Length: 168
Image 1 (spheres, one colour):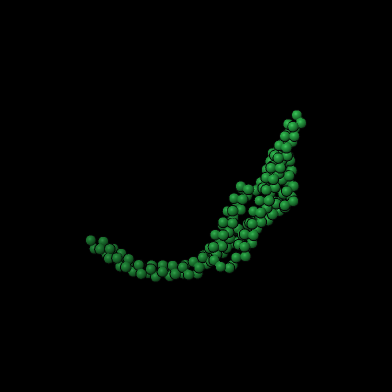
Image 2: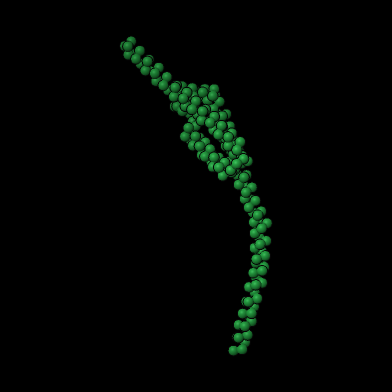
């Protein structure tokens, strides 16, 4: 029985060691991913107003997609139904400051989304301004000229038709 209890204790220690390693690995991989997202956000934000907007918007779209995938696939609030695993993960989250880092990344992502939305609104307003400034006057002038040019032949045609009806 002494040998079986030693095997059982060794097995428990090995299992705990493996589980604790996996919890530590998960928490540190989450932190690494969040730090990478912070770096990518900083790089994209530094490019605002410089270079191609099309490439910048594509990078922002990829970054937002990657953050959404991380949030849905790799960000966990709880990882274990066992109390020891929950407590260990909670301690790691506090120690590594994961919640604040995650909130920072999500906040920065929202700021980038606001910039994109503001940019699109400004482009739409510029387009409407150009329509009102150039196309609307041109359309009104063309309509005025076109209506007077079209009305003269119609008047002649109408007077001939009406005269023909009056004669017969």
